[in-house]
Every structure is written in structure tokens, then in C-alpha cells.
Length: 189
Image 1 (cartoon, rainbow, N blue to C red):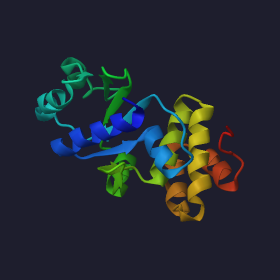
Image 2: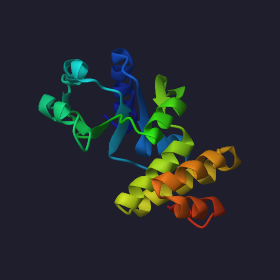
Image 3: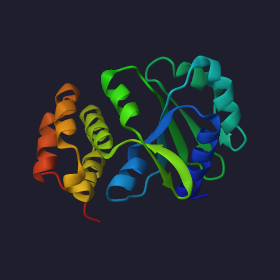
Image 4: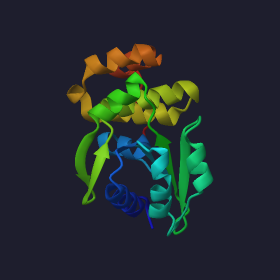
């Protein structure tokens, strides 16, 4: 099973569960920007404690998913994963937090079709901001390159007002400014 097949499998499972979610991380960056290989798939989900059994059941047939880890995700760092036993690829599930930025990301998520499956996808602006925020926490040329790849592909279609509005509260204003000026470039393969 490759990354694309695994993504489609996960989308079908999540869509059947009907939990609000969106695809983010490198897969969303690949959609909006310059694609690269990745070894995990990131979703933000609106999960409530009463639905833990449902998500565990939906993924337990061919994934290693630990119910205790899912329940523990209601505390920081609000994350659990499922490992695909067919490929050993990892799915990271981040529980949606009620912060102004995360609420905005949920409001701006986009419904589209990806590889023949319906998907809720983080907006390009939100993927950029999120990657820059993570780069601030754990510096990585990969995060900066992904963000620059989205800027390179989306160009003038990006909502620059939105990017600048959130960059201050996320502490990434310098990086956004450098990205929009073209001072941070996508990684050249």
C-alpha cells in the first residue's frame, strides 16, 4: 500500500464516520504546493469522548490503534496515531482545539475530491501558517520549503491579508514576510 492508497483508505473511513475533520500537513501541502514524499498523513478531527469507540473500531481492522492513546489525546499534546499494518505508514490524528486560529482553520476548510474520494482540506493559507508555526516550535527546512512551495504554486491566489492577520498572533510574521517577498524558496530537488 502506497501513500496515495492509504490516504484514500483513511478518507473513506473518516467520511463514513462523519466526524468533522480536515487533511493538513504534508499531504495538504502537496495538494496546494510542490509535492514531496512523506511518511505520514495528518488529520485534525473534532472528536468527543463518546466517539472514541467508533474511531477505534473504524481503524482497528488493518491499523494498530490503541484506545488508551486515543483517550489520552484529550490531554496535551492532543494527538494519537494509527499505524497501517500493510505499509507501516503512520496516520497522525490531532484533536481540534477551541482556539481562535484552529476555529478559523475549521471554518475555512475546503471540500473537494482527491484521488476520487471526498476530502475536507485545510486552506493553502492555513497550511502555510501551520507549517511556519511548527517550524517555530521545531525548526525544519522541510517546513519552510513546504510553505515556500505553496506560495510558489498559489502565488497571487493567496489571501495575503489573512496570512498577515494571523502571522502576528502565531509569532511567524518575519517568516510570512520573507515568504511573500520570495526570500524563502522551495527546496530544489
